[in-house]
Image 1 (cartoon, each protein chain N blue to C red):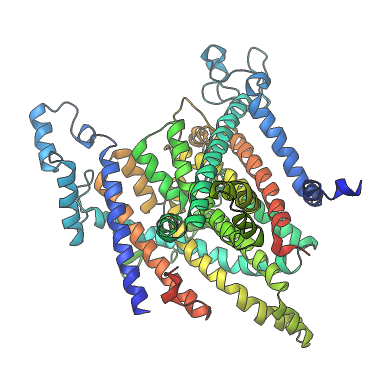
Image 2: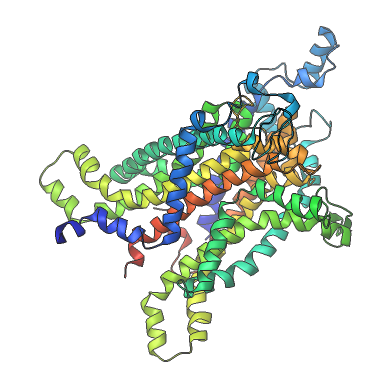
Length: 294
Length: 326
């Protein structure tokens, strides 16, 4: 029993669970991810199958019944599309873009950061200079310019998000790796004449993971927000791949005439997703930060 | 210090040139501006004449070289759409953006430091938790959506504040500003608050994190052991130490506020540089896109330089000469 309590994961889980707010965030996040994954199964209609849309149902207020007796709980947009279904499908695209760009950027940043820390010398200088220069500009500006040049598309926005994110990971990994490299266990591994690749991947890498987890969680939220913002500005995704940002942009023109729900509810879904991720990230930061260990 | 300035200058010039090259080539690839500029009914001869007039018939590298030579003299080309020098167009919109950015920082900073300090000193109290919960919310709310909700509530439902444009402006040292007239101020409130919210949350979190770490340091324990009053320990010892990272962040955030103004300006139809950029991207107004980026990159380089110098003055442990060496 005592042995099990001491396992690092258990200790980590127990510390994480200390904050009820963080547990709530985690639960919310699991719900949102499930809905996004199962969107085609749980949505009342397929919002992009034109055969299922009825123009007579356009711009219905939330909870209003259509002439055919259908109830739209969150209302409909200008084409008679059920907002709830639109949001479920939108979440799917937003999460897909956010998570996949973060994972790829993480892998890329991890690799370059480890190389910089391990190789040192001019390799380190070149990689870190690029990181410094890139991080001195706001992500939104770089992404905006990239998309202005590349045009719209899922692949293009993922590429833009990877480009703006990798530097955060590279910097985090490098600084963690530089600290770890000085420690005895790395020296011991060197004395044992283990190959550099093995030292890098089996010894150095696992010990650089905790700060990366924190950065990655925050970055998923950033990536989702950024994609929504760019799509809202009309530079992100094409209208055939409606993410939450596009749904919000679509409703903007009706906001002034008081038809708030077309913009408001997709925005609410976006906010709930990001709040949930940030609640989890916040607690992770406190749990994984050695400087706050009592 | 002199060596540092020189190295920084060389590096900045390199970044500017590299950036202009990438953007120039990139923007060139977007599409043919002639299609948008010339009347669709125009014949081939007229199209060809327009192409030559705009210098678009030359090879791309030659166009870039011509651009670079002119840029060195301060000429960033003429807008295809408005037919005025691109730099003039940007400079005429810059005061609106700067006014918005400064207004946002003026809202964010004086609120964030005390709130963050309270949250950091009493992390487990009700008020500390409330501040943090609020800041997580402010951090999570996407700027553009907050803008929509502000318009929805204060302009559409309540009808208290206008939702677009700058309102009435007056000249201050020859520059049009909004904040001196009642109408202009009313127009400024919503966009400035919209832009401030994210920075406010960010600065609260920064201040809180620094305060929490500072409270665990030996010098705080020592100051307390000396029997100093809590107000002096916090007001002098803690605040002085945590202000160093905070000043850095405020400086750097000023740049990012200018970038984020792109979003806020688009929503509130604020006639600044950000809105100009989005319009220029949609109209393929290449010279304006390139000129905007050159101006913004230049602004960033200046801000970063000032922050670094300030940092070295605030923190005697930082030496600028060696900072760039490793």
